[in-house]
Image (cartoon, rainbow, N blue to C red; front, side):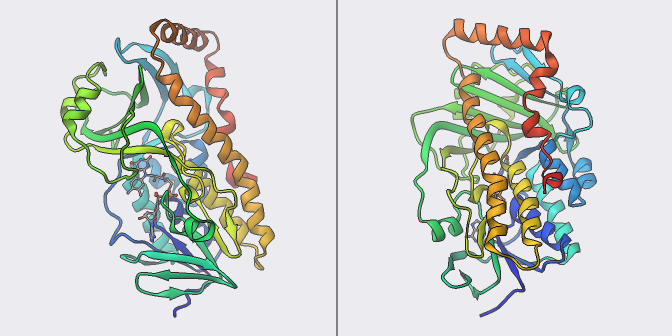
Length: 389
Ligand SMILES: Cc1cc2nc3c(=O)[nH]c(=O)nc-3n(C[C@H](O)[C@H](O)[C@H](O)COP(=O)(O)OP(=O)(O)OC[C@H]3O[C@@H](n4cnc5c(N)ncnc54)[C@H](O)[C@@H]3O)c2cc1C
């Protein structure tokens, strides 16, 4: 049996790496166990909104992330058929001083990983955690070892073994949405904005990443048939093209360039009722899987990481510290998740007169009070977890 210092993090995703780095900033020894054999160039685009960026900045990787990302000036809502802008939310103008980045998930992972190595975090790869328990003390059984650290942070994503070991299996339900994602070479003049094309029962999000050389596409459709909840499931490009053939993306035939899309079913998992047991604690998607309609999954994991590290930096950890972490995070997370859930139907209106009226209302509001359209999300984007703690 090995003992790895004080803290073991399960999972080297955005949440796991960020919390490991944050703990090292408090001089706490950390070891990370990751099931993959290395951090591959997998995934696609991820949006880091201002609330997530504030954490990255406080961790000392803000500049590296800004260099690797494209800075978003606005979010544009667009009609799927005419490709006409319904309204543009000018985040640069109305969120003055805040940074919203669009980047490849793998670039963010690499930046965090390198900084973890520089800060002295140790890693095991190709090691899968099989169970986590907390009978008298935290204990991990993995594919190759058994550990008894002081604290276990389960940052092991939507199918968290930690959450299941502690609190039993949850039964997520299929939301009736399937999301495709694809990267295509960018040969267009797509501006530095996130575009959302709204159509009946479907919407498409496009934005540039990697110095604008690549366009990230996320295509969401309502469907009765189930799709696997996995980030690595490949889909059929022809089915995707048929499904979205009525979309006019306005800047060339982007869909014809899609070669190997990925497809995943969107499932609703309840937010964990309790986020810790003894010295075992959940973070990121392990505690609160988040639908992608507000692009907040990675940002919430970053906020969790900062707050949890701060609570654990208390030299004599008590239950109260982990309760404080849960108290600081749970309500906010639940509120954002419920806003995200409500967004899909607004994009997907089917009845043409209703869609027309909704789009006209959005257009009118963006003309009359453009600042208000951005400011109503201040509680999400202007939130600073690093100041809060
Ligand atoms: C491969 C992959 C690709 C993704 N691509 C995108 C994307 O393109 N765009 C986007 O917005 N979001 C993407 N996400 C999701 C997004 O990163 C998360 O929703 C968000 O960042 C919260 O991250 P997290 O750290 O909580 O969980 P995750 O990012 O899911 O990380 C969990 C980590 O734990 C590891 N792990 C899981 N189980 C075990 C175990 N039993 N033992 C050891 N290790 C384990 C996983 O391999 C993974 O590295 C992706 C996630 C993954 C895993």
